Image (cartoon, rainbow, N blue to C red; front, side, top):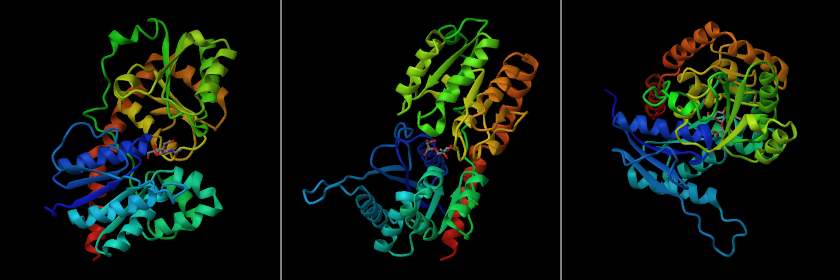
Length: 377
Ligand code: GMT
């Protein structure tokens, strides 16, 4: 067996998929005996209760009067360096190039080159921030100074190379689900609260940012509801929410739509759905579609970014061009009105989540990247 490691993990502790993946990975590494130190501004929302081998170090920002803006990034870099020295960390695994890989680079300068830096790209740093000329050099620095870089889809690797002219190796490490948590839940007693027995449930879960195209979710649903008795459940919070509420009122479909807000028990919530809608403009991976897949729920969505690497068109879901709500609605109707097809998709979803996105295989992949960079010493 390879030696056990001391690993620092930094992520956005309260942010969607990347925070979930970083935290779950840390927990799995700790289960395998590694010592994991989360270095973040608040406790990661999925960390849960006390667990052996897991430590949490809070980044506190000093608000000295000379600072117009309290410098979080510098406080993070300093904390990373302190923890790395005090706990004798082998490496820092950071999620997002900006600011985390750049902070890790600074920490490494303070501690010395023996601490390695592994950076995982999740999308927004490349597809959104990478478009900003003023940030490009900073993102490139974070990536080029990392000892290894991973990305959550092949599409994101291609995009990183294209947008930032990166030529170094980038490892493909897909996101994963824990089948002990994500499996089809028996929600028969809950379903009646949201739909009558003859109605299908369509669901969308996101942070309601413009890239999620939640307006398209509503358009797809309105088209579907003309053909199949159905309800729409919207899960999450975010900047587009008021606009979406207004749109639903304008279309006169409030009685068919429920807003569930932010939910923690995602496996339970997703299990209520017959179809997940994910018509995003950009999506480096689409973790929610994997969570749905693991619960036996197919996705109808767009062909954006890494979604086609996850959702197999015609097998575990259907994908249409971005913005083509008519096509996506047709696909949803097809799935919702053909029980044999729906059963086939459900089975394929469960198999694919278990076989291709299993937590053990992907944790092993990260571990071998860690050993690779440490062996380069
Ligand atoms: O989608 C978001 O807005 C949140 C963001 C995040 O940091 O969690 O998601 C990104 O990382 C996820 C985990 O790897 C991916 O599943 C999402 O596709 C990716 N979002 C985008 O690319 C827009």
